[in-house]
Image (cartoon, rainbow, N blue to C red; front, side):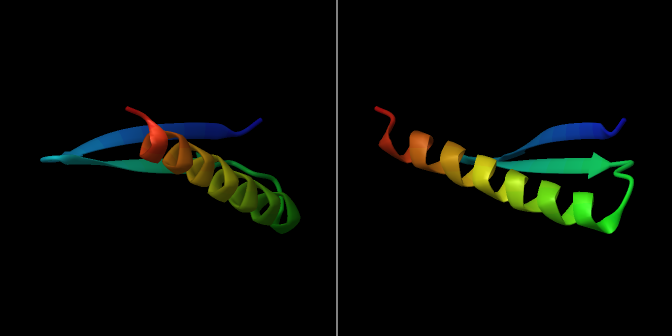
Length: 52
């Protein structure tokens, strides 16, 4: 089991999102999970950039 913490930090007109994923059992899983989070964040950014 792993633990994901998501923080939203108010930066005035912007918001930073900090994703912390801990308790991953090995390096291969950590690397794969990091790549997956990169994809998720990129998808969110694309969706928000086209939102009206």
